[in-house]
Length: 353
Picture 1 (tube, rainbow, N blue to C red):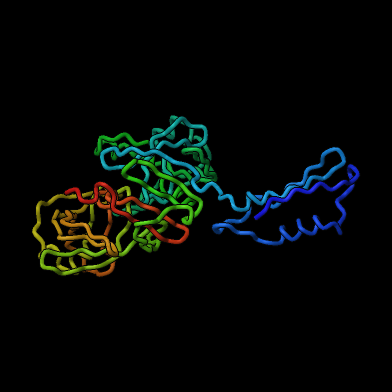
Picture 2: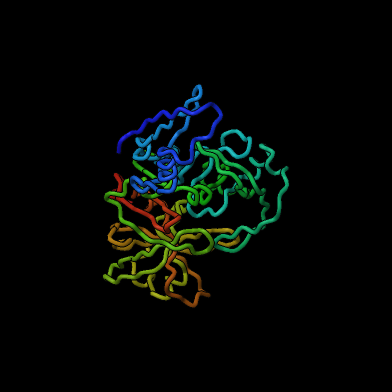
């Protein structure tokens, strides 16, 4: 496409003649959605008034120039097994938040909220749900967060006591963030170089070599995908799993799914233990299955947690929670707008658990 430059002599302050050929050309461009690589034009024409002359410069070179695809890059650190990113909320200093696809709200530790003055702002009660039920907390609406070079406004920040978590894991935690980023951007997570790259659309991201995994939102705004486990006897069991970057496990099998398929009786139990969630403690066993399969991706010899509940009646369908021990073996592209997660084995894919 050629560049056009035309100087039309008009008295200063006079409008451009409506019947002028260049006016018609501007109107023609304005009514046409010119697309290059699926993008609308950045600018159709610039009109400059210089000493009584009108310079109409068609910047057609911009029509083919791509919009800057990558919005920002956010480094992350793995502390124990959790992804941590640097975030500011309102006028706070830089906070260290866990990045968690299982977090439907941005939450700030209660002690941190007191220190930065967040808890003194107008707030309202909110019920926070977890594996074992509901806990009452408070929410401070309409806040702004900043990470990398982006700002996201109108965030509802939940104040939550993370001291028990920090004590158990020995990892200090200022809060948790997830959905507020994932829902606003296509989010590419590279575990090899420890970077999160944000994009406006999935077409801006190179998906070569990735498996496209459709998901659905269950239990609010948490993605769930289809997965299968292969038992030592060769039996293949399939169901829905929560895709949870904030779960420091490989795979947790619910008590209902465990009982329905008699999994405990079909695997070698390595050890017994217990776990806890919001308002819940549960018994569990650790065992190993031959493989976990996600579409055409297969991970071998995977340790998992079998939840036990003597009151469970058993149920098929909902298998459990897929955690960071498996997820971190893939580089990811998370596209919430189209309900797709792209997964590609990374450098740690073949490492033993």
